[in-house]
Image 1 (tube, protein in one colour):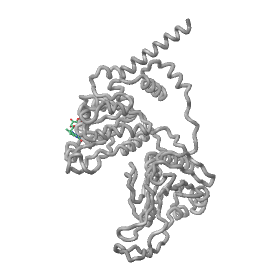
Image 2 (cartoon, protein in one colour):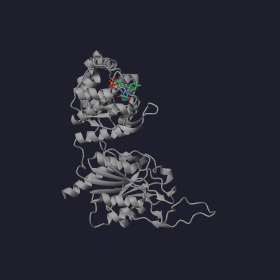
Image 3 (tube, helix red, strand yellow):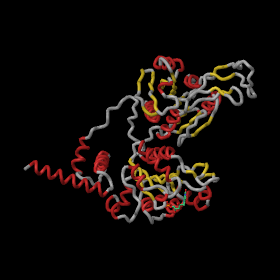
Image 4 (cartoon, helix red, strand yellow):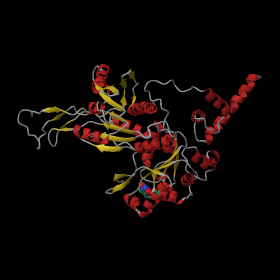
Length: 479
Ligand SMILES: Cc1cc2nc3c(=O)[nH]c(=O)nc-3n(C[C@H](O)[C@H](O)[C@H](O)COP(=O)(O)O)c2cc1C
């Protein structure tokens, strides 16, 4: 008898699940994943069997135990509602969905009618993992999710591409389709990534709308300058790159959550290689990509710090929300570091050339049958100079040690010789793929010992390091 009741219940639950999945245009497995996800986030929402699921999550598999330096920070990016407008750049928004999801976000998507001329709801929905929304008067979605819930169940609304038309409608308070109705029905922060022809961007009407939107508290990322989709057209109007939009979203979300432990702190970061000229066309360099230093600058900015990034020649975009100073040589880098002081923390992640050519040729050197006799002199040791300074020394001075052998021993020795507080040591032997790669395995060397962090992305290393910096600076401030 009892087993019959359980079986009946089981059947009823399965039927309810199938119904829900069909109504939401998802597979049963995906529906279960969504329900479990909502329950894990503690959100209300219709589920096939709400009570049992909630109980399961309340009993919860708590957070994993913290590991040294693992990027245990909760994902900074949470629930994003992405509105795709009708512009050529709509194809980039598909990549944006991927990038947001890589950062742990749940992404819901609305496509305007015009957007569907450029990308399909099917592609956007497939990337989001749930159906994309398109219609204000669609009874199925209105009675299920509904435009008001779409607006409320997001921590941030991103409009990308934000067309001239969407900007005008939002500035004017229109609500004649799903996208604009949602934008008007929300108090959630809004981030716009405009994209349009430069003439449209420069038009006084667009500039008027932009000023109105900024006054209303809407945040704008981009547009950048460059070639347009139309052959021969160039100027300001290119949509910001997806990674720049993600970084800005992260900044906004952390600000909204008050999760900015470096607020009021000034952090100086160096990044990339330096180029030491041999003559006007040749130079001595190294393989540093700048990825780790740039990631640290970005993470410090996301944590609320005022960041000055002094960077050598690199081929990666400048991080969002930092002041960037571009240099070529070690001497220029040192000058700019001096200029950027005082700071609460200095992170010297740049691979600064140890030597420069004492007298670079004023003209291109010619072949003479023998190699040129280059006289090399040592560059100023930026890390040691700042770490050993009495006045204006940052409270926390962090150096990087790129080693190819005896990583621990060399890093400990470097910590002692340079007089800095921490050394982040990494093995840059070619087989590790660290130089130029996206992942890093570092060892944090302090006077208290060595912590070996797990291999993780350079972004994750940066976030973990910034967390430690914030803890150290705030401890110092409170002591
Ligand atoms: C091929 C093509 C490309 C377009 N690209 C853009 C664009 O990049 N930015 C823009 O603001 N409008 C662009 N438009 C015009 C918009 O699609 C049009 O203003 C539309 O009404 C915008 O609708 P929405 O704002 O609801 O998405 C383009 C139109 C066409 C036909």
